[in-house]
Length: 128
Image 1 (cartoon, rainbow, N blue to C red):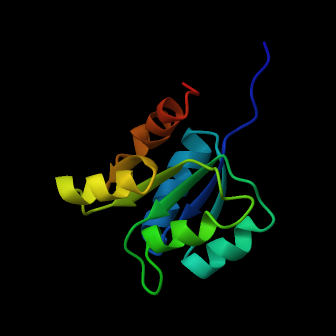
Image 2 (image 1 turned 180 degrees about the vertical axis):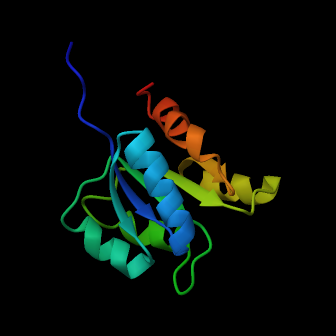
């Protein structure tokens, strides 16, 4: 049976503890190939040499928030067409609608369940 290569994800999260938990959930449980960054400028630099299947962006980060970062990534050849999922603790209806209006395929609430995170992303990406 032919198995497809693992999904590659550009993951941007400024909280080191959350980043560690998400990497374990996505790499060890989900089998994804993760390129993790701690802020927007780091992500813009990383995407220059990397074409992710998915952008997984924290919304609230110092300096450059997730929606602003998405605008920058959309202007790069490797980030122009990649689907995006935002992760945030702010999941009121109007906020979620705003993130979806920016082109997000989903908004994942924090705190997230590390045991179901990768399955949820695989389902969204049609890889279940």
